[in-house]
Length: 341
Image (cartoon, rainbow, N blue to C red):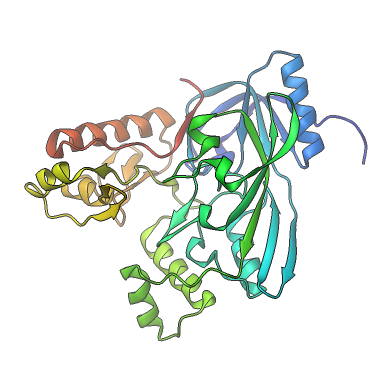
């Protein structure tokens, strides 16, 4: 390998680098394939006083028309399995495809990730928002997150407690955004009991007529997601647009005075499904130009072709305002916004 820094390109279209498939132009763009290249790109940007935007699979972002400074896309690959009698320690590079990692672990008989199958994006993006689905959150499996600390440009590994994982959030996303450039993830697999408590999963397993196993749970989750959610390769989207809101007992009772809605305890508060609120307000299947709400899942905003990031965000804001007016509940947007108009 040479010591040359990765090539910086200018005025690069990011339409194919984000799952919403909206047009956005990066003032500067560089793709890195290992920690050394990433460090070089970060140091060079600091030396030139250029702001940096880190990008993985572009699956949990809404891009606006232009991103100033340097977009660094992390495309590092590699997975290492250290197996023992109890399971395995799995180390995966930040640019690995998440779903492919799930399948690779299942092929080795390692349980733990099966409920997180078919979630789009890269390994490096997974801890950012503490991805979760069907009763499992990534945080329950994490040993540590490898990253470059941009304060001192030194590689580091944050152990799970330092990551401040919580519902769809972490130190990387909200507490200290842009401080850590995630280079990899270390997981402990093979020890967690199967999670089949979600009704959709149990019903799908029943339809499949299969016994409970990591492979059958993964297959059930994949079937559910393919049935409910649009394929980003065919219809631009970033998955769920809103987080499930957390309400006090008083606010939940007030909401239930207006709407029949499920809830589950989360500490001293109650989580309610945002999808139920959006559907009850009449937005499911709505379309304005090429921006719309997926007809089979009320939380998924989509780009039917030529929608802009601004049009997607404007639709999300209209939905938020309507939910606040009708149900006195504030919805929080899940994807991050990058760039400007």
